[in-house]
Length: 285
Ligand code: SAM
Image 1 (spheres, helix red, strand yellow):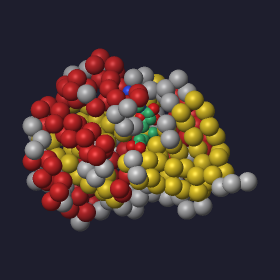
Image 2 (cartoon, helix red, strand yellow):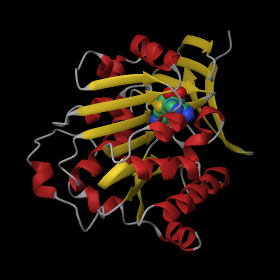
Image 3 (tube, protein in one colour):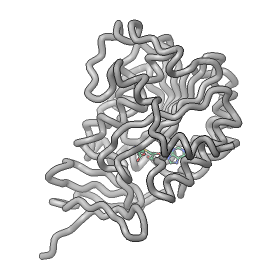
Image 4 (cartoon, helix red, strand yellow):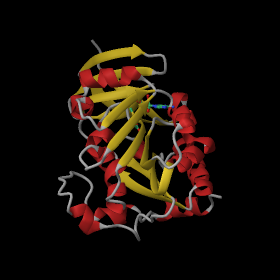
């Protein structure tokens, strides 16, 4: 029998492959194609519409960086909303803090149920915690109806802007997030990558909309081996807090959290961007 591969195309002539030991599960939900694979180097790999979402080997990088920088800028975050995030990794990290309430709005219940089955490393966060309220709904509609000023932090842990994730990259969605945040509110969003043309186009579009919506709209970077080019970004948008000037290392240190990627030296460094990215951002209106 021939070998089987997960193959993700980055450009017409570029792709990334991982050899598959076992195809653990495959199904089409109402929203997307969902697959889980066993691989030697990356452990369990979870894909949506054939794009890699989470692997056991590098998920800690993504989930550290989507969560911890915001808490090091505002250590008093108490009310959090996650949009997407169906694998549970972001919720797992948020629940390590002394927050009061976490709402998570995921459009596809099948993602959650299958991650509970195949990816307990991240989905363990769905085990009972009375601060955690999990809803199955469209994040776009949820924020349109949520109470003004209800959250200290909104994390958009979304798929790319195709399929169900498309609405989570619109100006309307960002405006509603702004309204749902209080005066020290922070929005962290999955911000694509500057390297390949398609990702860069989406990155620029998202940044342009965030700049128009929030007085502070910054970008930070991290190294993600299984995402296109390995160079990936999150957005940090806020009403009043700057991620570098308002960074509170001593207060974050007092949480005494063990992290595997994020640390206090890396925090300001992550916001210092390479020249080619600064040049791209200069042109963003
Ligand atoms: N770490 C991942 C990445 O960037 O590759 C993203 C993780 S998570 C699996 C993304 C989740 O967003 C998916 O489970 C998907 O179902 C969910 N999602 C997509 N569009 C959504 C929407 N409009 N409302 C709520 N959740 C949505």
